[in-house]
Length: 390
Ligand SMILES: Cc1ncc(COP(=O)(O)O)c(C=O)c1O
Image (cartoon, rainbow, N blue to C red):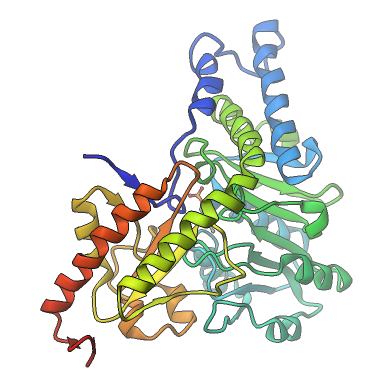
């Protein structure tokens, strides 16, 4: 069966060019980049190239790039470093729609170390309450950490604006750009952030490689204490193959940004229009403008998201209900709940997240599968009668 893959916010296909770039280092070029011999040095030089490519992707300097094992590690390292740098400050500001990669860390810090965490609310469109955010800033704030783009709805937060306020008040600022990377341009200098997280598997690199950008001048303390690797900022022999893959993926992502903003956006909008036209009782979750170009979170009244996913899966269509990481629970995701999406559509919400590998034919396959699938589920639903919710 042909797979129609529209779950790119969960993970992406590793690009052929990335595999090609990595293969020699998985095979014959296995040297340790820290070794003194020429054989190891060959790998070291390739890592330098990868570091430069990542730096170019986000407009950073190569020595501001720290390779980690994933987005989660980058997020954790950023927060721990901030609280180590300012041990006397016991307050952290974030939003109530962050990814569990960082959200669960806040709950942990709250419970075990007595940190006060301000979870700034969002409105119905998923947009941040900026007044509440600014009001919560204080001399006791160790760090503000906010995602650039939401993984479920694609809604964007105005990081540049908020980082400016944080800088004026001398508060450290981190952004989780794991979902934004490769979909919209990332420029750390323009954004004015102190730290920024990336994850390889969201941008067509392998799973198990992440990046933390650390602005020059910040007294970063390592999360993994060990050898001298990454200039003492992350111990452990480098994941050379994946670092090399990450470098290539960043180069490709930079080249593909225009395609994201044109072809992928058009495909997403085409799918959105088709579904809204052909399925009654459907609504989009999140702001229509301030949103990633590849993401469509759409709720269907009076049906269960999991049931929709099963029917899509039978036709080889991969999508997600809420966040892939939180599926398994039947409650609507914390993001949709924070947005106060009505229960009738939050329960039937599906996320389609596209990449440049998708085609218009695939969007038609999705529509032609979903229309009868939703009808079938509503025919069985006690909450749907005569074309509307009862
Ligand atoms: C916004 C966001 N941050 C962090 C992560 C975690 O990244 P990783 O899977 O590389 O740990 C994800 C993964 O879904 C994400 O969407």
